[in-house]
Amino acid sequence: GAAIAKPKVQTKQAVKTETRRKEKSKRRVRASDPISRRDEKFEDAPLYKLMLLGDEEYDQAHVIERMCALLEDMDEDQASTIFDQAQISGKAMCGKYPYEHAEMYKEQLARSDPMIYSDLEEENKKN
Image (tube, rainbow, N blue to C red; front, side, top):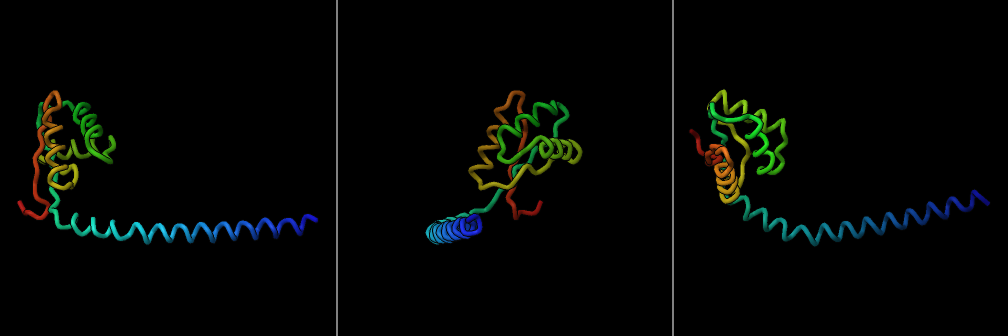
């Protein structure tokens, strides 16, 4: 009796798996058109580098905390590395963003208390 029950269970699983695969492939087809259009528009927009400017007056803990709070996908290790690099070389890149996002991050850093200095540079511009 047990040997007969197992094939039935396996057969049902195979049917469910096939059904799921079909649904996923349909979703991918539907989603691909709008995404590709968005990508084309997005690629035309130049990216800007958000540069943290080094300053002897900075409190390291404050700068790292604000960077983690404001910038997407920024953890304490990355923020600490960027902070150290900015202190050594005068500036360090926090990330590349479309102009409006980069400008917003710069404003938010500037509004921090105490103020955190940053600058924007075009990605393809050579300084």
